[in-house]
Amino acid sequence: MTINTDDLINSIIDSLDRIENVQLSDIPNMDLYMDQLTTFMDERLHKTTRYPGEDKILTKTMINNYAKNDLLPPPIRKKYSKDHLILLIFIYYFKTVLSISDVQTFLDPLKKRFHISDTDGLTLSEIYQTIFDIEEKEVDPLKEDLLKKADIANSLFEDAEDADKDEMKLFAFLSLLAYDVYVKKLIIEKVIDGIDEKSGKNKSKEQLKEEKRAAKEAAKAKKAAAKAALKK
Image 1 (cartoon, rainbow, N blue to C red):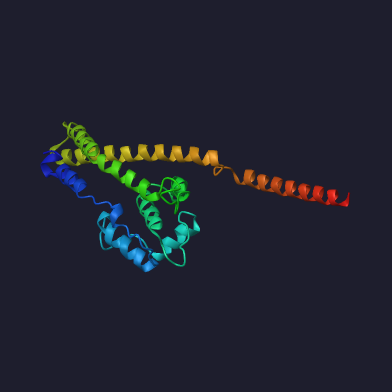
Image 2 (spheres, helix red, strand yellow; image 1 turned 45 degrees about the vertical axis):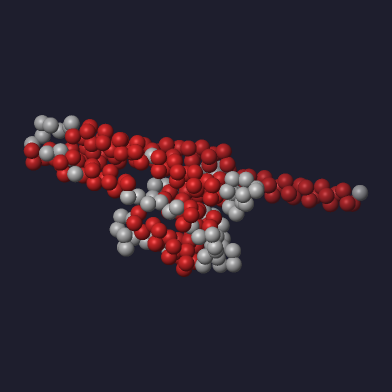
């Protein structure tokens, strides 16, 4: 008995074909109040949760925390635009893998393009469409990788007792998947750390304190020089 005889792999592969991303054309062009926003997100993303109907997609508290942590620009007259929704969808997916502070760094390039018009450069809508287009193309390679990992797992523990063999093969399959996620998460974090280092976000409290002190001293010196020039 192997992993395949339980139809586990076929079930997983079929589920990949049923993943539905929020299409750009489905995101309202009109501004939404917070209740309308949470309703839209729940309707469009509830199938992506582990426990649909129980897991929360987005709450008012989450939205307020995202704004406080500078992940999301504040609403305009209590309304959220299409660009707000795009950022929230990215946050929803990324926060399952990364810390909120890493998501903040990750989204910096997108926040700089918040409410940019078509004539001013690359818009969030164009970025969103491009990213989800390439992600859809990754489904088939992902299926192939799953089959490869299943074959590897099925080749292991052949000498184990029959009562243990299936459990060990399944354990090996899950271990391969978990290691893949672990390594990719490390890679993402390393790249983000490099971005933070360039931007100065990784500076120690002592460094930031010293820079703040130096800035104050420079401001005082500039003020004193200005006063001295007036006396002359």
